[in-house]
Length: 196
Image 1 (tube, helix red, strand yellow):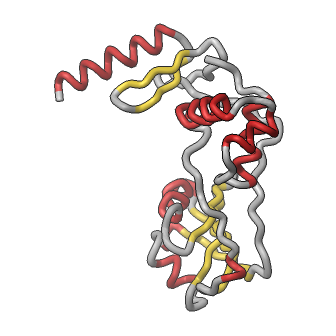
Image 2 (image 1 turned 90 degrees about the vertical axis):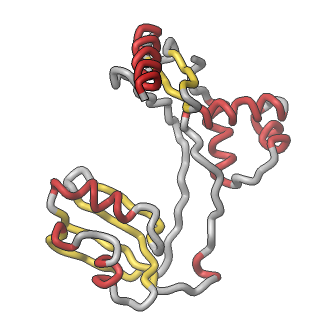
């Protein structure tokens, strides 16, 4: 498995700026051919670094409700489930789970009824307090910086280094810290598949 290098970081940054940027344009910026950029993007997708290509909507050009920042003081045992319930639901753009078991969300609330909006999406019994701030503006500018790969072995949860293994099993790509973990995972997968 090849390391995550400066070229990979630059490709990611260029895609973050414009996910529709042609590979030929990216190639000009990173000094590779367009097919080489395509290969790197495919590899980053296989590794799970790139999950998809999205549209960045300028909310100021459309009207769909009131932009709010919602901070939830949640029972620590329920923080992960509350955050998971908010992710991917209508009106929620970003969800953050803090180290102290808080949950923050950027949301667009249609009628200004934040409590009603939340009640449709989460179990309010797990929420101790709600703090709502109206947003005047919001900007989302993700960057790659000096990021490194942080892959976890599918078998033992150890960190996968450049000596690690990668394999497609049952249609999904998995990362392993060593060949032994790959073989143990594959054997268990094949056993479970045979028993199914």
